[in-house]
Image (cartoon, rainbow, N blue to C red; front, side, top):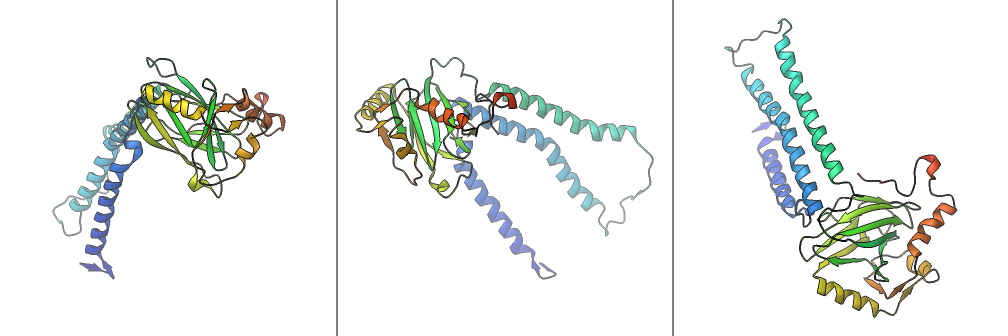
Length: 302
């Protein structure tokens, strides 16, 4: 059928193919394939909010199509009454349902926001491994203060054991994101944010910067590996065999702008290096002060 030069059959076929392609992409979407309790809770929240909103959207679509068919020009039997008096019952029905939906969504999101607070330790998961994360141009530096090592573009930890991240930036604002393990959180110079991770089983995942940060942004991704405890111990031993050392003298060269940086290990890290990275922006006046209402412990998450 054609109308004013438009091939509606072709248009409907194109829309159908687009919807089919979108459905296939959803199956590969990392955010819908969680591998840890935090990501699972966030996926469930997404589905719950979607289902609640469908309570309004689906009836509206059905009624719109029904009204269009019922009151079409060729249907002379349909009663058309454009003038009618006020109806308290109809008004109450029309406004009460959206109000209930909004309240339900508000309660659902409030409870989930508290439960998924990135600063809140994961309950009943044992002691966490602390890792200090530094966003750079255009790579990620992971410092393991307890193990005394550092790694570029690889984050490794034991499966089943929580990971507590302290995150900052040594450049413009970045966004730390591992879709299959946790939500996104910002990394900002002179400030610190926190994030908790946990993987249910061993595996490899992709982490990335979801905030545009310049020319090397497309290469600013990193490997996330959850290992058995034995493999994690072997990974630590491997890192300790690396020739490089990271301290105040070698750090500037490591932090220099670079693209597509391979995984690099440092067998030793100067104590307090992470705090020095944060402090240099505070001393230079680039960071907000507590008196301005923003400090190093202010979360920034979307």
